[in-house]
Length: 141
Image (cartoon, rainbow, N blue to C red; front, side):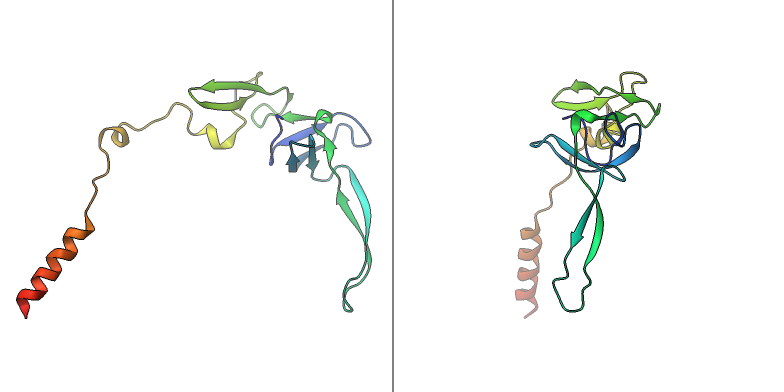
């Protein structure tokens, strides 16, 4: 499934055709996505406690993933998602402008610091400090 949570999508079919919205929830096993402000259904909510009031609540119902298309954040066009693979990392790319759609991967693409690779962190043994303190404490007595 090429649609993830927090993606902006365009609805392609149904009552809410040509509307855009942000993906609130995605369920790959069912092949559905829930889009903010789209496919709104009314549901009656019964009062369960004495101080609650029964009411009719409007909720967003899930849409089939085939009825939505991802919108690129850079070029603002509805696109078919393209995947690129670098090493063991697979990330989503806009085929029209080449922008990365995965926010987690966008800053890490091909950037590594030389200082971090050359100088590993020094490990400090805490045990040695405790033994020194114990030895100095015995001498003080």
